Length: 383
Image (tube, rainbow, N blue to C red; front, side, top):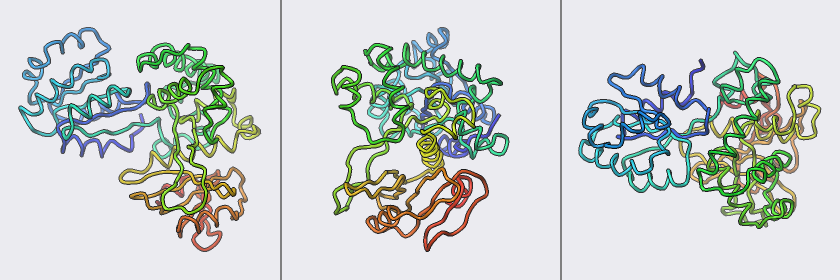
């Protein structure tokens, strides 16, 4: 079992706040992390709201919480019982102390809205991603991790056939059960087709009109599906950086399928040699690197892409308090050159430091003043 990067910060949050919510997609390891924390915490109780007995145990939440008033109460699949939040608030207000509740959930708009409103000032949120390269390396090399993705059960599969079977089952569960639970009424076939279209357009500027035309539906329908895929942590919208920029810029987000293994399953790629030969390899590598970087950082960082109408672009802009601090260019070739586009992006955004991230490990060398060529592991260890 791999140690998750956020475990220590989760412990600190539990020690400081009455309620902590750990959110993330299905099968990402939320329960495993929670039980790891419980094993090192005195006096805990665990409830899984997909278990009928546990669900029924909370039909009288006031009585239950009274009986476990000195315990850390861990509630899994909390989105199954949104009416629980007023009772959580009452219990927290009655006994205001840290470490009362750890809530696990596959997020939904309703869950976030109810918990944020009802438990305002009483809850903090953390997101758990699929396993990151910084969590599995060197047990799993970057090529295998990039190819197979970070879902723990997918990584365990010993054959390509089983790996594909796992992903197919995972997607079917989301399309037929989880996304409808978010209020998505679109047919399963339409959702699957759009998801496949997103895979073939990995890392592209989002054009909802094109997707709507291809599917024969309205733009609002496409928007609704995309929003649900985002709420379910299946896709990431990377917004454009548009603050204090005088040039005409592209103001639409880029969209990425978040897990590289899921992307490759949808593209029919199951071997590293096939991935490297695929025309989508560069976009796959770009999405993989962005996901690793975004989930590696904690704190007040924001992430953007940058593109002007004149063709200047930056794959990733890392900002702090919305001020650009670092630009990342992501290249799949092993001998990258400093592009005019990168230099122009640095000038436009007033950024002094940039990195060009390439495949490999242990690579780091200067290219020009302020610009470093490096592998992903070197970038993560130095930032």
